[in-house]
Image (cartoon, rainbow, N blue to C red; front, side, top):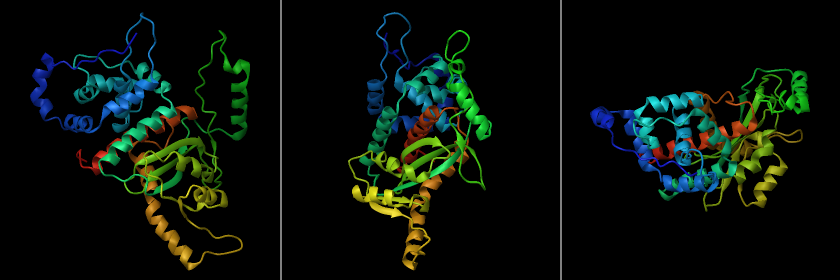
Length: 355
């Protein structure tokens, strides 16, 4: 068992549609993307982590790069589900060309995309995003001069429930009878029991929290992850800083709002020789000086770029609500969005594609 041999043959349908394809703006844009990225380096990462079975029986697997490109299309074109992705690939010439399929080749089944996503790991996606960012660095873009860190709330994919009800659901899920069906097979539990309520009494939300770091020069997403909504933002400054380094260039400065102020974070930055760009806040014993107020204003003008990413995610990616009911799946969704976002961002900055 190996990978399918995907050959993009020039078919009779291609000949008939050639004139219309030459004027297809979506196809032109997608092929600009296809021709501007070194896919071989991404494929090398995928094949290193995505092993096929050794059995001689059964159908060959789809190449992992084809399936990964499908997940990119899903993000770029705001496709809500894997069945819809399959349908769009079968319907759109541009999608088939990007994936390397001939017009008469059917799309992989939607379950194939789901299984592929489950097999991806954080390590794989970290390496892929590093490969993408290094490609843009080689074309002259500085990545790590400054990193802005922030967090945003994301509504749960399930309806909100009280803390009491949530605890009951978790106890049921953890019990033997709650985990297995009558045939002894693991139950498919569709209710989100990993989300919780955020700590803000004036603006309660049941869901998750995305912690992210963004390159202040170009707006690339450098790191992202998901936690329950009640987790304190300040705990994730070290995580976002460590996972922001994708190139040989060291991180020079970290920018963050007052929520990240505190001795542990400042000590972490000092120990790692990273400049402190965390805003100061009033304390019970001392108010901000004029210098500190002006410093906060200057930091605010730089760190807005991470809020810009959150705004784009809300408006265009419908990311204000979680797509899945488990944190693990939502993390992978974030990492796929990170790769798709960074590819598009870099190509737009370099003017290799039309906006």
